[in-house]
Image (tube, rainbow, N blue to C red; front, top):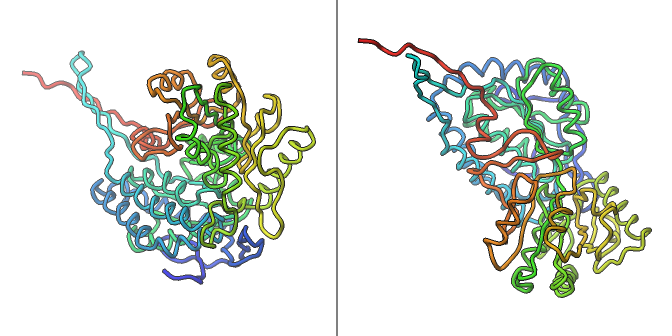
Length: 474
């Protein structure tokens, strides 16, 4: 695959021409650099019909064959990483190094998913009957993916859905459609027609998918507000749903933490992908004993980070991905200024063009402030003091979100004891927030419904079937 490239949707295993197209904007320049096809309602119906027709054969295909197909798709991503990396940086904004890691990591995640198996339960009910419980695929899965990690979050859904025998219709964000469309084009070589369809479009396409009677399950990653609408729409046809939604993840730094050793990791736990990461640190609680030394270290790091076009050598942080999110982050910065909070680094937008915001650190704003209560999804971080660990845990848990969190300490057992008291689905100890293909990832409270990752995540794409038999006699 090469670029420049005319990107196409994939329906029934082949390119699907579109009557309309929309511009894709490079957030570093604010200029269109490519166009993506606009899926019509008739084309979505065609994709659903194709997926439904392919489902019985794909579901009956031996697991080992499906496993090889998923592994092969992962290898295609790895083999085309350089080209896809360049496209991903242009449409999403992240630096080349991070874009390359996302593409290659997505390929490796597909290959890791391909090693997993569904459990089968054999049991005796003690009343003269034997039973076997298998996990059967649901049918057609509609997967809706956001713009922050368009490829990585797509394979979180695609891998387990395909491996468990479902067929898939994947919709990328209109802000970042190209890399996902390219994956659909690559998949034509390794997946049967109809098994994996990729459609792109604007705001109307998502609701068409969630309401479509021919789709059996929706798996969605995005904001909590949009997740509520997805769940409401899916309820009309009783679709199964998996919703990975917003987070306002708290990091708690205990007084024994080594400031110099952990400062850089803490910094990147908040600012990887410019803070546009659902499980990034979004509130940083620091014990009084080390508050000023650690905030000083973080401020020094913030002033040395190179912010710029992700395609330029040495860039560490790119732009915010899109104008609506850029305006939201600017609104938070304006609220910080209007409220008179102390800013230790950053504090305002960079010169245009480009949706650039410098790393901004806010010195101990009140818990009721917007920057503490809301998910910023950008490079702005509140630094918060605490003196009592019970108080810090209570403040960390005082959020409508419960996606992830982290604890930092020289004593990992002590950190683990704190971690178990956090009301979140995942907790990271002394490390960056990184997920695993082999571990379940689930949000609590308003952070989601259902599970991604691990065997538990695979089971989300299935329903159990139990076959009862009489125990042989004689």
